[in-house]
Amino acid sequence: MSRLSQAQLRRLTAVHGWSGTILGLLLYTVIATGTVAVFSGEIGRWSAGGVRAASPLDVPIDARIRTAAADVDAAYRDDIAIWAGEGRDIFAFFHTHAENPKTGEPDDLGTILRLDAASGEVLERNEGFIWDQPAAWEDSALRRFLVDLHVQLYLPSPWGLIVTGILGLAMMAAVISGLLMHRHLLRDLFVAERPGGRLVSARDRHVLAASWSLPFAFVLAFTGSFLSFASTIGFPLLASIAFGGDEEAMSAALFEPPVAEDAAPAPLADLDAILAESRSRTPGPVTFVEIARFGRADARVHVWHDPAAGGVLYVTNLYDGAAGAFLGRQPQVGAAPSVGGALYGLMYPLHFGHFAGVVSRIVWGALGVALCFVTLSGLHLWTRRRAGAAVWDGFARAVDIFAWGLPLAMLASAWGFLLAAPAADPFLWTPWSFVAGAAAVIAVGVAAPDRGSLEARYLRLLGITCVGLPVLRLAAGGMSWAEAILHRQPDVLTVDILLLLAGIWFLRRRRLAGRLALEAAE
Image 1: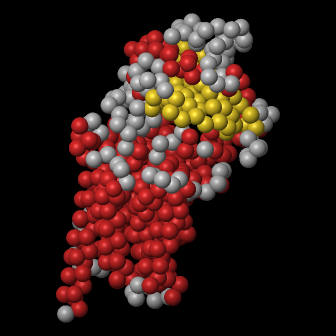
Image 2 (image 1 turned 180 degrees about the horizontal axis):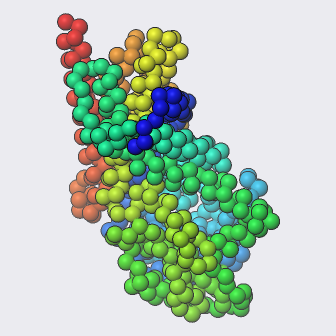
Image 3 (image 1 turned 135 degrees about the horizontal axis):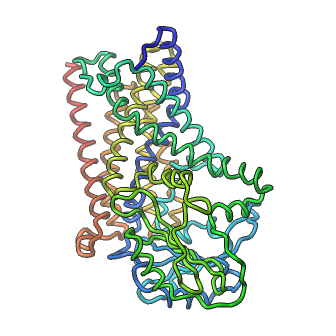
């Protein structure tokens, strides 16, 4: 690295420290919830508990969709979206576009059906602006809440996305300034911690964790800012400049290949044959199917595939809906393949680690934990240098409460979900349980006589809540371990075991911390 003058180094330290201090707790929230959101699929399957030997989209669905289409309003057959639930259910959303009176923006209006994949029986039917009704299309209120908490801090749209986008920019500023401050980056990758509890030892731990996570932190910050600002600023600005404010026209130009309009009635080609042909071309599993202009000669079928083993990009195959002929692979954005389209397609899998199966998610989760440590240790270093001032001592306690309180509040939301799922509305009580848990941990932190006693109290709470969750899930009617093994549902078993191990570790660490404190007092 180039050598900086003392004045430049002081300015960079100020930028690095103050950017982290001002937005540090919010940044920690986004990173910690993002670490959890990486495993949103596993959390959804654990909390929903549906038996699923294979994807419902792997079974014949053509007859089921045709029967369902005959049972809905013809005005809602403009578009049909089809995807699989966590169990053996299929969601089929028949919809058109209309102005949502809540937002004043174009939205999807129609009928959504939950179908049994085996029998085709309609298990549930809902009408209206479906995206305002998450219970109609989401199996797990817990997964939905945790993802929303990460993506937009559970704030109303678009403000939540704008805030997380700003936090991504702040994170990039911290990464770049931290990189420039590293005069010996390669040496810092292998720095050895000095003995003792001195400040320099805490700094070494911060430097070591930060050095290894710098590239990952930049990727997360850049992709997160892109995803947040693309929908809130980028695309609306493009629509205003290039399409006279018509967002539907922009969406058609960017995401829908041009089609010569032909409203003549024509039956849809065999959907099962289309899906089989798509699987023969693309090894990744089918996760989503969209049928545009159902029953017309200009119908189109889009088949989305998850990345295959060793792949990164999601793949969308396009078919002529009337003839069933393959029309080509649809780019992520634009009418033709491009570098920009490929880069756009990389944003989501790189941000959430969804490109190499469970391996990439584990790596992303571990690096997310490291970034949480980097953020909190940086805040502790900044406040420790200013110890003695009432404001900074109070902020240091707030950092401790926030650091322990956020995971406790997320666990409280899981408790609320499991308690509400049998008879109440989990989409209401899951976020309220998070709020109640946050209020409780704040009260515990404020009531503690000193910062030294906070860790023991929070470790005990973390241990109890982690150990109690698998027990509560079973008591609430969840799948037993025997059923999970019998039906090959590894997520249920894995999450339960990890929660039990985490709870035992927290309780053992609390006992050790108490013993050390007692020995120090003697």
